Image (cartoon, rainbow, N blue to C red; front, side, top):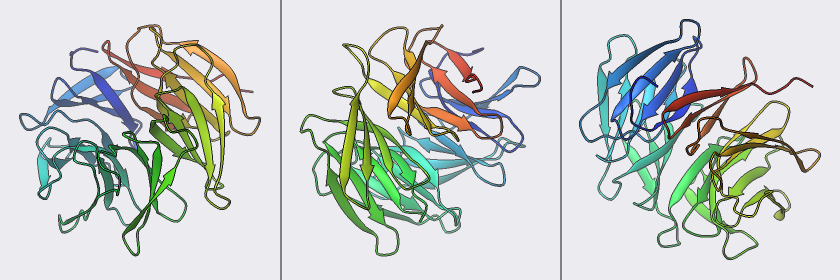
Length: 295
């Protein structure tokens, strides 16, 4: 990377550009794979963006994790529109767009899960029943309902977007701490347990759990991405350099492990459906692209 600042949470836009957060450096970055050029966009002082997403108009939305706002960045002018959070929501964390173009998000230390109406700027926020549940990773299922990994406890959360009611689902092990999750085409919830080193599957239709131990004595699975072949990619941050592991969700087994050459932790990953590659940032100052072998 041309700048320091913990590059993380990349997202590929409609033009093939890769956007990412410079969390500790307080900037948003753009990488053009064709030219190899980087561009830096400044964000308001003290934002320390944690996560970003790109909408259908190629506008960049980022989580102002340290100063309680979600920002919209115009990639042409660099202008930023800020959406303030309501009282009690101090740290927007991870964002996901719904079909209406509104944004569901987590606020880990505020113990909130929110919905930003991008047209009006209004925010609705829900609080898990569990104190200090630490809502972390978030994804939407095929019906547009959010599922959230509650990193401060051994639970997942599900929200009915019509009634805005929140339900908590307890994982089988008391010491489990789910951090990120993915949802497959059948609606199964795949999560990684950072604390004890497991990959888990929850089937909402039956309420059944299945879990598989991540290889290694000190595994700490963190960033995840689910590709078009049903391969769950995950970053094991329990070793340095981190390993990128592949878990075949159909065969229910790990099928590959690749060390990250630059070392440093991998916190979030993005699957680019256009070319089948995985993008991620590395704390040591690298943006990385993983290209799985074709089979």
